[in-house]
Amino acid sequence: MHYCAGLFLLFFMWLFAVTGLVLNHPTWSVAESWTKRTETNSERGITALGPELRGDLAQGREIMRQLGIEGEILWTPTRTTATQLSWTLDP
Image: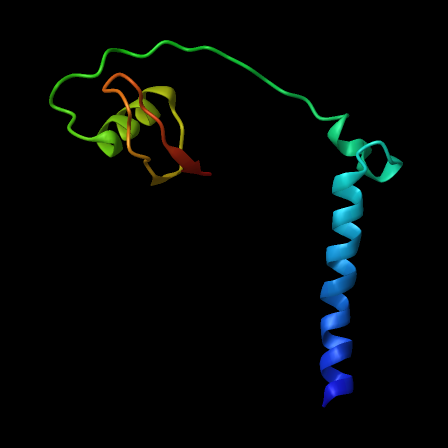
């Protein structure tokens, strides 16, 4: 039983070791995909949010609708100021 459990866990130990080495050594040729990525930035305007939208989720859904974004809002953190809106999407 100890032998079988060790063989089973060996896979996860090797996976942890390989991913740790690749993530800690980005100059290695294995990690070249990160330097070949493309980033896209765009700015789009939205209409002002009215007072009928109460809460971060309603405001986030309205902004998503205006921008044509699909997905779920996972959670909203506690805001420090009333003018700041922050949420996380799950595509």
